[in-house]
Length: 187
Image (cartoon, rainbow, N blue to C red):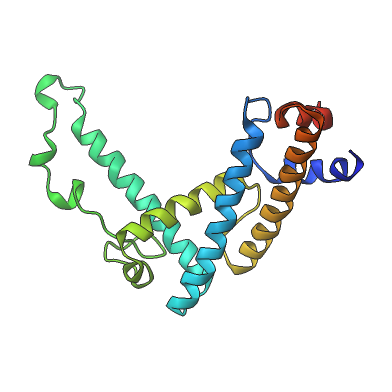
């Protein structure tokens, strides 16, 4: 129990989770595994592109922000306006550049032409990596923006994953759920 007690504060302060939610340990461990996989993939993709990992990460997050903005705009245009039923916009009547266009944005998020980095990845890989980058930022309480931040994030992910794997093993040995065992350290 003492080995985990020393790590619990670190793991719980590095990750953003509702620790009272049922199944949180298993979900958090899975998110940590996916995030570690993303960091590895980001390193491989950035090397293949001849770019800094932070530059690719920033381009992914800018693309995601632009995509979310585009989807919100399409949703807003498709909803009835306050003017009444006649104000209901038909997405087919809206210029494709406003609703349908799925561009890959530049790293600064201000241009509509594809980022050269992301254009080489393709739409499917860009979407998957952007979603993974978003989950990484939502999971960790560590700023993740450049290569040094990614090293820190990878260390935080590994330390947290180590704790949750050890917690799960300890819970299994005791015949209790990992969530129950977590409460022994936190509450």
